[in-house]
Length: 359
Ligand SMILES: Nc1ncnc2c1ncn2[C@@H]1O[C@H](COP(=O)(O)OP(=O)(O)OP(=O)(O)O)[C@@H](O)[C@H]1O
Ligand SMILES: [Mg+2]
Image (cartoon, rainbow, N blue to C red; front, side, top):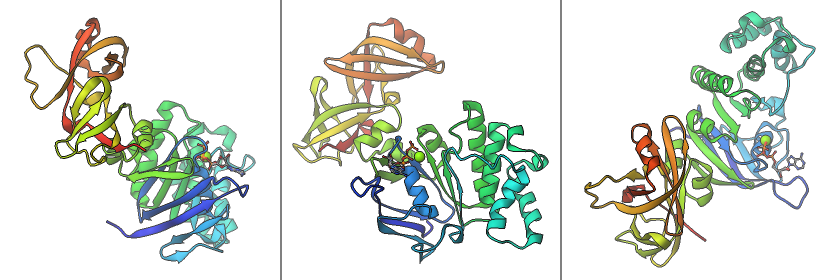
């Protein structure tokens, strides 16, 4: 594991002196890491990037890059590249003059400008578009120019604020692959902002989930998905069944869950005996139980089916066990049979119950 490279220490930002847009966040970003800030609109993602880039002052806390404080270091001296949210290219400049702009700002020697611009355009696959104007380029091509412009001076850190937000789904996926390729090639420390959880899951080494100016959890995508630390994270990432539960016996992993009665969780570490917890079970971890199938060790229930949503490769079955609603994701092969049945027997393993403290 690499050491901390870019450190945010108890960073606070208030624009108005009353409400904190960023409310005391700490993250250690590793060198070469691809970290994604994921969270709902207004949760403080852009504000965080703007402080790292030096375009907004901190109200409190500190920033360090490679062991040095960034306080009083001007934006262009931080050697940080940024692609802004909704920030267009200079419309009156060609691709190459757009990309050359940061080099001129930073007073790079003249003889370095052309080779650097060429290299950056090569990297984003736009070498033959050098003399086109932004209006002559597609949305995806314009985003690549913005990316080339952020990379051309070989920054230590790259900040990308929802760079694909305006693109349609196919182009978005294409650009996700492209950005990951470039990250792999250049090995640059990257902080990527999105509110699209799938994008965060597929692109990141780690994800930081933002909620209302605070960080709920920082973890690799799969850990975030399978071991969410809070209700917010479990709910925000992936589809979920959440049950309010009370811990009956911590060592045996027994929880009392309303209509479900007692269920078993393999790791009830989120709770103390008698404590109130959330039990999370992912819809795809719930299986159909067939007639005569052995079910020792499983949590099993009879579910009445209320509706279903077809996804092509799977069916999401929505139903109830008593007063609790349940979402079950059934993979393709089994799916057709399911929907006809008004009553289903379903089950899940104790390992698939995630216990999260409830306040
Ligand atoms: N320049 C500003 N002046 C005052 N308040 C601001 C300013 N910029 C942002 N805010 C407020 O700070 C909070 C965080 O905003 P921010 O732009 O960081 O959110 P975000 O997570 O990037 O959201 P989105 O996903 O919509 O881009 C919001 O409540 C917003 O209204
Ligand atoms: Mg934003």
